[in-house]
Image (cartoon, rainbow, N blue to C red):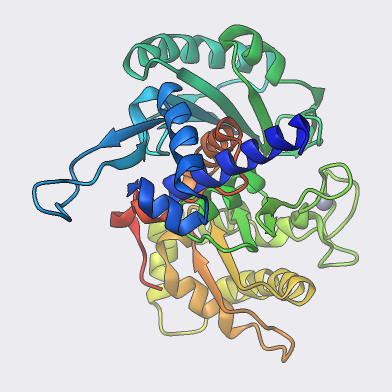
Length: 395
Ligand SMILES: [Zn+2]
């Protein structure tokens, strides 16, 4: 074996061990050896390195297995550092701060009154600077390990913001300023991609997962074999611009009859507002769903929603689809009504459910992407930590 091979294998073993410690929360060196098949000498060397780097800590809180001796357990050193996820939307920026164990310990929302890119960046840096200097003192010695940024638009595979329909940003870079200011790695991605990643990390650790985000537009995040599927240049999943009406409404994308002009939650909100002026979208939808009679407004909306969903299901044959939108998240009954409209014999899937992460999903996904890169792992699994257990919906 030459040294190149040796260093490759060392890296590989390190990755396997970190993945295993994260997934199991807390385990002994013998558990690690049993679970990974690596011998105890290898584990001892690698674990010592991880402890020296402050990534792993030893705990002795486990139950006694042999008389008088408690096993020494290994855990990720949550307090040693943290990552930041940023969701830059049209009217606000959401920030999520997660420790090295992926625990969300702080979140913040910055209202925006401008779409000017430089001004948005200026406000973001202003808020981040004070937070970073504060949390660097609390989460040490490693401190900030990386930042993941979600953009509501198309982001290229090289972190470039290609186009955002709402702010009309094109060919801009957000990562350089952040990298420069905080001296940390920065990852930029589409919001739906980060949403589906967060769902996988925190709730559904399956290799293939789909998440449809339904706020002002409609996006689709796809995880294929544990990787975010981005397509040739990073444009994959622009499902809101699938045409559902050949001579339909004109769309800013240049086509007519795009799905999001008929099935986004913004459209539903506008219709509800016309029907029940003065009531909030939540109150209006509750009133509609409570009615036992068929309602044309809801029926038409669900018809359009079902057209797009039918197409996604028939193209991908998904195991699970998660729907994330402000209205849909609180109303599983809404999904029942939607599923009644999926009548094709080809519609094969296991489950469609609402997101449990809601509008935190994108920022959490950004923080999780930074953690995944910091640890150098292929799989980041926080499902066993049950961080958002109180929000778990019946499935
Ligand atoms: Zn369009």
